[in-house]
Image 1 (tube, helix red, strand yellow):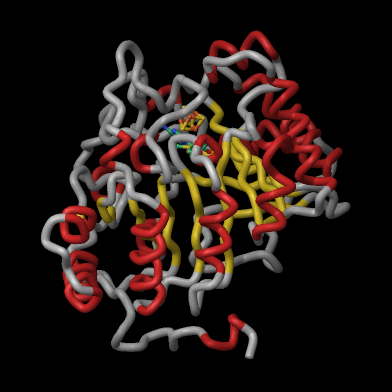
Image 2 (cartoon, protein in one colour):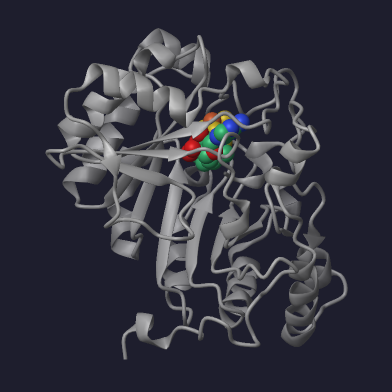
Amino acid sequence: MEKADKLTPIDSPTNLKDSYNRIARKLRISLTDKCNMKCIYCMPTGNIKWINNKEILNFTEITRIVSILSELGITKIRLTGGEPLLRPSLDALIRDLIKIENIETISMTTNGFLLEENINQLKLAGLNSLNISLDTFKEERFRTLNGISNLNKVLRGIRKARELGIKIKINTVIIRDWNDDEIINFVKFARNMDLTVRFIEFMPLDGSGIWNYNLVMSKREIIKIIESNFQNVITLDKTNYSASDPATIYNFEDKIGKIGFISSITEPFCSKCDRIRLTSDGRLLNCLFEKEGYDLKQMIRNTKATDQELRKYIIKCYKMKPEGIIELIRINHLRPTLNLMHTIGG
Ligand code: SAM
Ligand code: SF4
């Protein structure tokens, strides 16, 4: 039987279901809080307090938690960080995760810097798809926005992953007056490479404290810019529409290249959220905007909890999933640094 045929029924009593009736299907695992980049919209400036390596979950602990979550209805895994490619022997982890019953896909979000030297092994291990972050095509701006040199190395990684036939999406955070003059170049890139570029609205998850509402380039503004530059009118991609996908995807008339929008600020999608997160230090986070989360590592290492105890605890914690950013917007509570993206994994 194929893995996809063995899914937990949609509304099985063993599913994770919160008080807003949302069911968790996807898990994002942050493998480290460390990074080889220092993106202006993510990392704190100055001295960063890194999580001590001893506090980071090892692969056995991660695999155990994923096994339990898979029994509770999780079917899709995304590896993220910090920068996941900084974690040695990632291929071994992918091999273990893909063996877990009910797990259908393993994807990864990466800044792409270490991709060219690692992608072969990751593909062999079973990695299904990649989201690669890219915010500029200008070397000097790359240094300012992403805090590192050698943009070409990232571009080589993208090309290599493409050549290997891995499904790729590009994640682009557009910040007003920082890189909004490159929107058209990103659209051309999507069309030249025939792939999807997803524009992500800047969220107040910045360590640097620069976030303010005026810096957010909304989906609506970006669509206007694209439509005034391309004769090929863009239309919603209904074939690719998935109720739980945070991105809305648009096609061009000639169907070459796709553009997506993750409009967390101007069109929040909390009501259809089906994600939970595991931080690198072993906390379960129900939402990007939940600060402390629920300490599974403590239960595993200190209280030596059984699988049954962990399962019960996770079900209880998931019921407390907050409504999400939509609530913060409603009560006018968006402020910089609401949480630190590099510790949670986007
Ligand atoms: N290091 C990897 C990377 O950059 O792709 C994975 C971790 S990163 C935290 C995951 C995603 O979050 C990236 O696509 C990044 O652009 C996005 N991101 C980080 N900070 C953000 C913010 N304040 N607002 C919106 N997206 C953000
Ligand atoms: Fe690192 Fe990714 Fe954050 Fe940039 S967005 S600093 S690459 S974790």
